[in-house]
Length: 321
Image 1 (tube, helix red, strand yellow):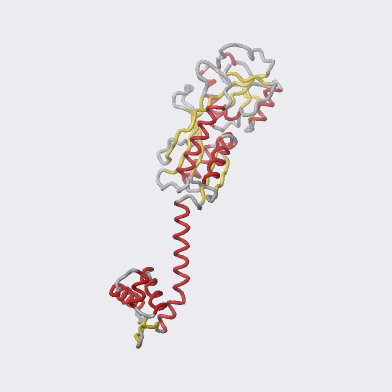
Image 2 (tube, helix red, strand yellow):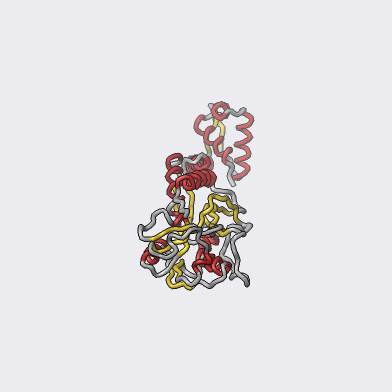
């Protein structure tokens, strides 16, 4: 493989006509330039320069190599400039993914702050549930993802629950905790318990339930919580759209547990109540592959996500009874 420094030496010698002039331009000694040319000639197996009365000039082989040298050096310089821009967050890209409720709340705040500071970085965002995103993150499709998981202290049914979906506790993922996202009980405004103090999950025995699709992490956790409270939830409707779930609650066809991140907009005809003594909580995390170097823009975006989470916790929708 041709050596870039030697190509630069050949270019300068050909342009300036003497080894000494090229040495001055490159800030080398004349001996160093001579050694670079000799090594390059050894690499290609051909003489590249010939001497004449006033210096040196390229041979036919030298002219053929020089015809490509400008393009090679220009491409290398462009690559170096692009890498410097990426490292300095003046370019490059960051591929992200998020579950929907964080994608509608935390991610827009973080992206807006990031773009203000680093407008040259190209950002992309895909959406999906944690069990869909985590494998794609590990496969290298994304550089950074927002996921959620339920704390180990959360109630578990007996017997043991079905296997959990892909979790960011996997050792192949580096995880950064962002915030706790409690789940609140949504009731029809005219429900008998809408004004009751200190609601407990046990009081919802016998109610019709509305939840996300049965295989989703949130639906599975709602079932686990109900089992821990001593009853099997009677699920009447399923939807992965929390606005649809609010509409079904308002229509008085059931009750639902809704994460706080999904309560940035709340209908007037439903009541949102906290469960006591402790509501179910989703732990929202940022995750990246543990066995790969972070994309240069990822640490800056992580900082923006921390700030967005802190801002949300300070002014977010808190639904205490």
